[in-house]
Amino acid sequence: MTGSGGVFALILAETVAGASVLAWATPLWNETKRSFFSWWTVIMVLLFAWPTWLSVRSAAVVGDADADRAVPLALATAIFLSVAAVLLLARQKAAGRVVAIIATGLSIATIVAMATTGRQSFALGLFQLLAGAAFLGSAYSALFLGHWYLTDRRLTRTPINRFTMVLIVATVVEGVAIATGGFSGSASSQAFNPLLTSGGLAPWIAIGMTVATLLIAVMARAALKGERATAVQSATGFFYLSLITAFTAEVAVKTRFFPG
Image 1: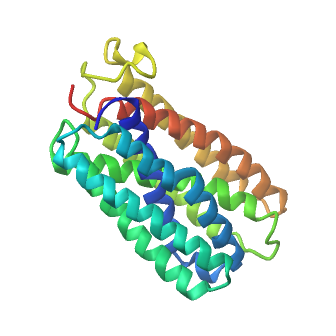
Image 2: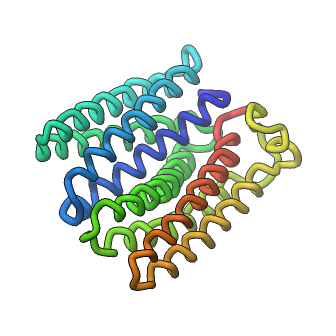
């Protein structure tokens, strides 16, 4: 894969995988209303899953066997998530959950396939993509869940505290993943901003945005210690900022992911 389409394909795939794991591989199913998952799946399908497939397909270089493996996996993820959305909206909750869990596995498989397209070794590429998935997935999930507290007044603070801690840990891991890509000049896509290719600024921008995300997440965790309901609203405001800084960090560092 190559170009801005390839970078966005990575970022979208990371978001789908990370957010899916947090939604379906945690105790959240037993903690909140089933309607949460209906809305979650619909939004994930429309804003992330299908755009991921379109981005992967458009960015795949003809004859690139590694990229070709990611295309059908991204398509399968989008299809299974779409089926899960239909089942959940039809109140077939158990079946919808099973299909969504399968889609989660497919989204991780898509990440694994994409790791082979990087300029570094498969192991390093996979670590960088999994770190990015945890980073973006937790930032998005915390923001989405924070809004849900306006709907589910009986929801305890346990899920939002969990997602906040995951974001804090994922941010630290993301910093390590950025460092594994090196800080020297490297080929970068100029489709976003020529500054990213100037003097190897991309990883430093990514580190700066990652540190900013960490500070924001810590402030959100501090806000959640308040006992009033407005504490969650305050934390959600912080999560808006964390999603912006996390996305910026990933864009900067993923412009260096592919070979020059």
